[in-house]
Length: 411
Image (cartoon, rainbow, N blue to C red; front, side, top):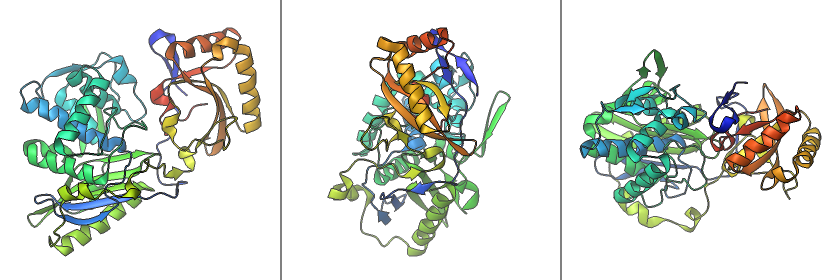
């Protein structure tokens, strides 16, 4: 484990990240979504729950880039403008390009890293450059979504990291993809890059369909445990372009396989559909009114278990909000519970405001139960850990970015 000192002397676990593949994951009872449209006309070629709310994960970065490109088109920004990477941007987890606080990069480099490597640090740096802060930039993103006709989409951040309030639909993501093609065709090749280099650091694309499907030349992947494996693909064959959206696959391989089937069917069927992506927005059903599902369990997506709760299970990793402190991880849940109770008793008033939690995570192939307090303010987390350190007891403070991300593993 690697722990770094950040502002106010808090120790934050920024390592122990499991890059989750498909192994060990299963799909909960949840309705996945997909949509394929003709890119030019907007004709719907196939649709499955296209208006159902879903978490966008890193598909979010498509809008992050769209907003940046709109600023460039307006003359308020250029690809060569410099960005000084903030400590907040450099410290965002878990998928990072590897930017360092104080490093100077260009807007072009930030866009490339966000698209190709899905770098959260690059996305936040770009958001801060354009919006002044990530929350302000997220407001711009939502406003832009409304202007494009993405009626069910809300953005809370520039990265796609878990937030219960950040939602989209397959239909809205298709609208965004069409807008990128229509409004900024000169910048579309950015989405077809196979690698990105900044300084001496290089990263390959995370979008495998670019190499696996003939004619695929753009757009984005995304994953969190709440969203499953998402993919937006743009493909051109014989002068005809279609856009496919798949939300909620159970693995990287499944999302590519499902997208391949949908695209093959679309190219074979032609453009006989009279349904349009615009009219699709008017067909939201009662089934689309519910909250976005959490669909993956197992492996690094093991549910967080709250001590004392009726069911003992949190179904959304994003509910581990605020700052958290962890008192260690144990192979036995009862041991973790005992450590948590002793820590709370020892902290006394310093534990006030924190929610006790036993969080199950996979570590080195086995289950570990972390004894934690979550939902704290930054200052309260720091004071609590300082008190534990003075007693020579183990304690780590975890930022909201680390705590709320299902791919992070701490102990």
